[in-house]
Length: 220
Image (cartoon, rainbow, N blue to C red; front, side):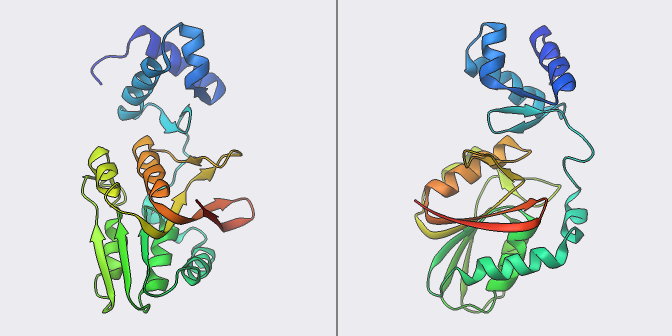
């Protein structure tokens, strides 16, 4: 991002003041289209000045997102348990997509001894966990590899996911909105998660909450 436009400067100021800005509200305030605001937010987020969430962006905070290795050790036992519970919902001889996240990695660990699975993933760590499983076929998505966590994101990843229709998907998310929308800190990751949900017959969503790590099973 070479320069911040006056409108983007105002958006940043508003985000600092309120903690979050929404696409529709900004479009009304600046009298531009939502598409223009989304472009502004994408540029600001790509520069690391804001973090994209469903419907808008949030001002970054040290408490918002942990380094990936630190997140692995955060509530590790709870994540291991929820990984086992989520894996128990996936029968042998089925197809599943696992996305990015430390909890989805625990699901992968719990699936290593299962029979006849086809696992599609945009998570390099999941692929490494399952690659030596003797009865699991592992397919890894193409796209941009994030250095921070080994996640694979971007338009190429979205296009790759569109090739499949799977029995199950396990989605790791930073939060789930009241309307069921998946929320995360990287809008590219949200795009991939949305596409995974569209191409799965059943989705298991895992998230951190005040009461610990939880899983929610949804069918489409």
